[in-house]
Length: 470
Image 1 (cartoon, rainbow, N blue to C red):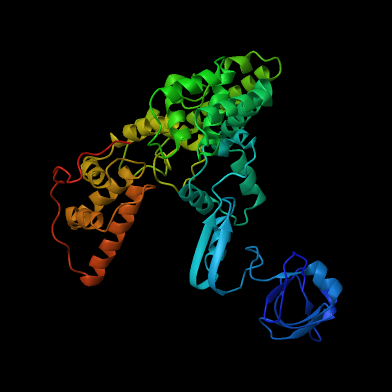
Image 2 (cartoon, helix red, strand yellow; image 1 turned 90 degrees about the horizontal axis):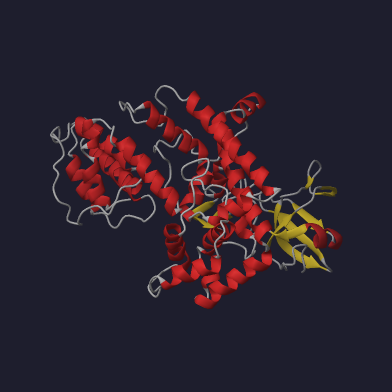
């Protein structure tokens, strides 16, 4: 039996009605509604007899309703799935969901819940003009963004107050500046030239334009061309620098090389590129982009002026120099890092140039950790193999655990022996393991003090070798 969504139903299939119809009564006070789920009991001449999966009431759906308003009921939107349960749930997310929607999605299955993230592009050749596709988010970053997005109702007064915040406006201004820059570059350079650059890339390495980081590399080539250089020559130079036979993502490696060969001038922020020469001289785009840059400059100054006292993201008992606090606050505002994220610079940035600036900011913050916390930076780094944005957070926590009498060296060792740490957020994963171990200790010996560990950390060489840096 053909349905409105192009699928076919048979006896025993689950279907979903998608339109309210009071004429299709199922009791003296109830009727067929949008979102109702049914089990097909019979099919006669195109009409469907079905039983409601919750109430057990029966209905006869005529052919006209079936072909226009009935779909298979095995898949649904998150909103339709509220109250629904199944043995196993497979959900698809694109990264724009709220954490409330994610919770609903991930609690539908009795036995298992799986989420599938759409991390790839849709093949649109102009996709690179969107800032989020120049450095595509990883699966972990997509989940972080969903968890940070609160869909709870907010009053108009609170919304207006937040929108007027210089920090919120700065994030919007930086995003618009970057977006406008790419749009202007494509407009000035022209799609024909962009096609020639893409053909050059395929000629150098077949399949390069299908590489995961091609969106980022193509945007970088666009900026180089707009800066007055020949993007084809730049790409050839980067390609000839060293063989790419062992590269997992050739586009990513080429982008790193171009960053060093053709560094961008500093724009309104140290990690934001300046307006390329060809765009700055353009009679229309030049003035527009300059105004966008001025808007970023003005908001940066407002954020810096409004920064006073100890912000909520600072670890306890850490007194940062005011200039460092202001620099980190501007960074957090520009990247839209929510207040609930207590990592000083938030999640690790994917872009090489931006990540280097982030590393320097994290280093400045770490220098001012209290002595006990700072002493744990090296042991944490030795277990993980590198520092990341969570290193200082875990170091502070370990210092507190040591003061409480826990054998922190033993905790680090046991956590490290639980297996390889993930590539994304390795230190945060180590922190999670330590949390579990501490909870196990408390359950095993409630009320009994742990072995003394008030001594400073032992700076012993790591069996895994020295840290690899950021």
